[in-house]
Image (cartoon, rainbow, N blue to C red; front, side, top):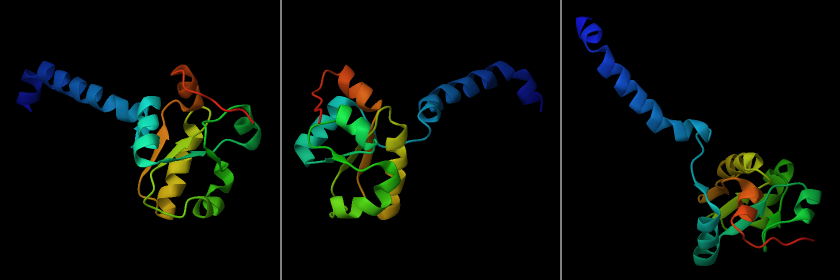
Length: 136
């Protein structure tokens, strides 16, 4: 016990350092496999990743990534197996801000898809990166 009392400053520094290292994980909600816009483009080009937009149809019509498949998050469990048959195909989930895309990741993993990621920041990040958006 005297060790802790004599070295409380060192213990506080160690605790603070650990907290700062864990902060990005805590901030992102523990999500693994998120991509920035440029990494998403590289994955689409190099590994033929399929973009799954989990927005509702009206949001999808206002602007989406070229070639994206619109599968609203509420219908994802039923429609994803028909839209992407190969479970080894890389999937990139996208929505307006990124929150629904993370729910999409959970559904896809539950269905057995191996390579699933989400676009960090959603369509807002895509637009901010100056990447093309298709309107339908």
